[in-house]
Image (cartoon, rainbow, N blue to C red):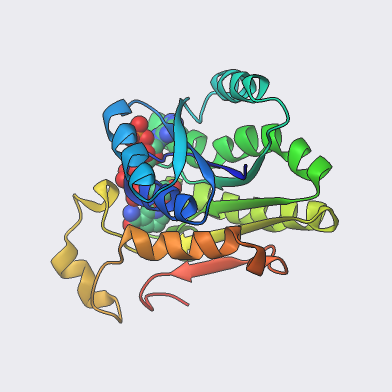
Length: 242
Ligand code: NAP
């Protein structure tokens, strides 16, 4: 059984990634934070595609919760190891730096950046022992370009991009690849409050992307065909920034 873990799989991009990986034959561990109902919808969609999976609840900011939940699952499934990890869970709390509260900074860094260390480090050993692994980090245009009002989010995503490149070199010889996918504006709950009509005038393709368009790239990076790609950041942004 090929097993993949998708953090933040209950909604948006994480849901589309879970469905895509299920279509590719992975048993998908669908992580969520609080939204059990939406996570169940993801699992239902995974099953509708003929795949299977399981919900796994933990807060990606809590090393303790991560290690307990994943440790328990692995202990109950002897011999199983998670060969694909998609670090997708994320939040944004926009504010201009002048007005940014410490909490807004720390919450965004904890969820988008520190989670990378906690989840990845826990699963890395098994990937290295098995000499097969795919780590795919969902970053953002904001982490490449910097977006005003998002210093916290840009810093967190830029941090994950740096970590992606560093870890890729640390473990390249072990046949574990580490890549990042950088979406632009994608239609999900995260972008619901944005002025889509105004923003899409800046996008060469003239529209927001769909979660499935991001999931297709993640699926490719998780596949055997992507075996010689590591340390890469792939933009999925309608031409907004290349
Ligand atoms: P979304 O629709 O708001 O979904 C966020 C997901 O993250 C949910 O599944 C949520 O779980 C989970 N999550 C949030 N905090 C968590 C925590 N502490 N522990 C575990 N899970 C947590 O967001 P999205 O648009 O799909 O974004 C997915 C990723 O793409 C994020 O990393 C985001 O930064 C990135 N991204 C998005 C866009 C865009 O335009 N949408 C652009 C660039 C990058 P619950 O349902 O349980 O709350």
